[in-house]
Length: 286
Image (cartoon, rainbow, N blue to C red; front, side, top):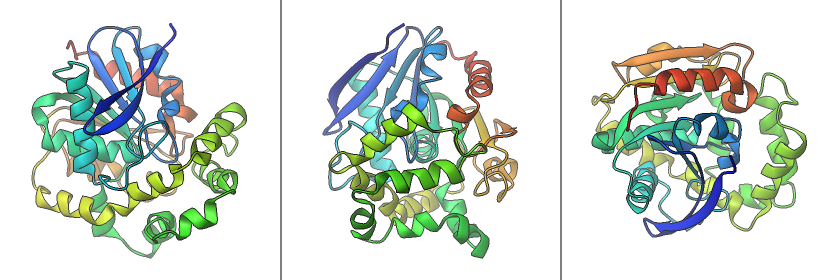
């Protein structure tokens, strides 16, 4: 099955989408430092049962990179309007890393539009800020670095491969897991005009994201939630009690640590992730 690749206007930006399959709709939201290419191992498997839609988020990949709109409420609205453009009334939503932040905000702001939610290797913004200490700051140094206006873009320009190599090596159980064609694909994506700025803008919305999260901190996600993470990632599975973290966010909850895995479960352990996704998504009939 060859996926369709297209762009459409939704929420005032041009969004790039990879789509495959028929059936109940499932939307996949990638994280940093990736694009929708991160889902290359999931799309063909899920497409055997579902209509799979994988957009590049605002600021990433081939989607527009406007100057504003990177708070997670606006980015969630990007997905709402994408659904409207595609005539999709309700979805199962899967988000990794930054995409999980968008997906979590989506589930809180638009509970009637989501049947079930998967969050992958993500500690919610509010909890990172609340629990911040020296150990967390050391692992989350890039959160702070990316907040600095203009400097990251200036230092990274022409060195995108060095910047990305650090993350893909440091964040994986096997430091060579993202290499060859996969690594080159990501490097090309972040060499595009505005790409680094777009990713930085996502992080620079942190204060607004935090304010949004604090406003409805006591509201739990209404739909069933699967939280999975790499058991061996120093900034998530090794640093937080993830079952406890997500129990704060949802009552109807399944939590699964993935052994021998870092921050990128869908790329590092795709067979395990695909099985977990198929099992969790099985009740979703559209």
